[in-house]
Image 1 (cartoon, rainbow, N blue to C red):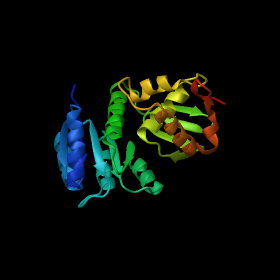
Image 2: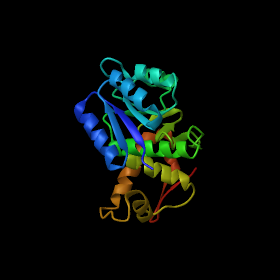
Image 3: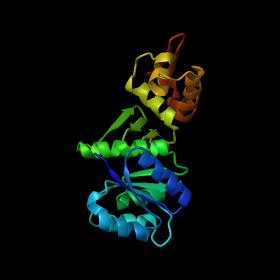
Image 4: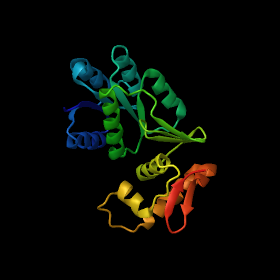
Length: 226
């Protein structure tokens, strides 16, 4: 069954890119260029909209104002787009009822993945329930696609996130480079297997003191363990 998404973004190029990405995935797309138009469209199609992609900084009505108006009578899923890194902005959004944040520049693959995951969990009634993996100060939120190290959110590139999650979900198991490549990069990947080592190095750097949990097993691969 097709899902309908409302894209609210005042930058023409960005809005076009996001709209095309959702259309290519089979979504029915509505689009608005500012906050006032977003409210008008939502009022007309409220019962048919499954998800809203909402920019923060827009003319006429900003994203927070739009979110506040919508939350007066609807719990539709909302993903906010922001170019600002200030945590206070995110806290305000969450207080107003934003379900998820994506920081610009937008990676449309990540945006789509989060959207589909969110809608899947809404459809089966599990959205909003805890879906977090925790391991001694390392926390992965599989709904939000976020990683926290000792309580601090750390930004991971998509493949870094997938690799860290794969390691943690297979805690204690030795995973060969070939197995990691097949799982994370796919069977049709024909590049150098040193890409795994490069990503492990980047992940360790971001994990700080917790990097020691990613252990190198000589001539075998890697494992995640104490």
